[in-house]
Length: 88
Image (cartoon, rainbow, N blue to C red):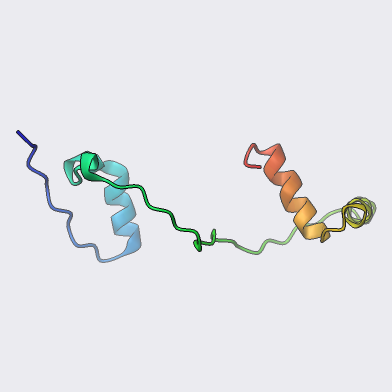
């Protein structure tokens, strides 16, 4: 016998939906046994610009390291940060 699923309410905002989803079990609303894997090859991660103040000497060393690797220094900084935070 399958479980009766609850309907998902309509939300007035993304914030309202986020609060709902954080406080409710999705298995009350979705039959995960019928879920199928999908691939989203063109999905791009969200990004945001930040301002980062670095000592000039540190930035110069980063630029030299990036030049040796033939990559933009911003990309090298992102790679190093991802590696250090375990997201690389």
